[in-house]
Image (tube, rainbow, N blue to C red; front, side, top):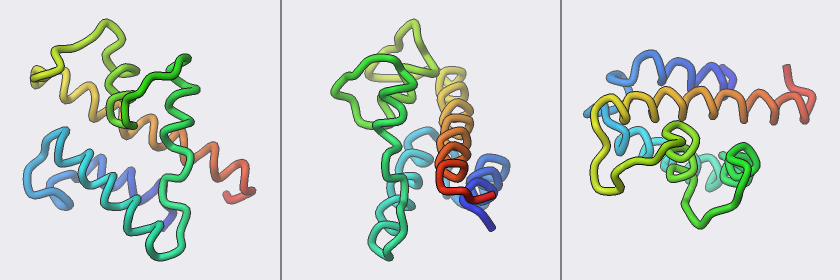
Length: 112
């Protein structure tokens, strides 16, 4: 199973992977996946934040999930609490952006 297939499965069946479906849980899962992959010699999500900065069109000091929020909610959000609709939009954007990032990385490496 490719990384793209793995993440597509998670996006479709979040309840199989996460105890509670929420933006925070998805973010933690992505961070855990990245840490595990790197610890075991894989690329993890190396370059993910930088790719998001380029995609966002400007640098900021946010971690990757803050950049995803900027992209998914370009008109801003309440930093304390997202509405359920905003959370859903950010999660959908996260999986779409992650797929796009991995597709570009695969193409650059000649993996199909």
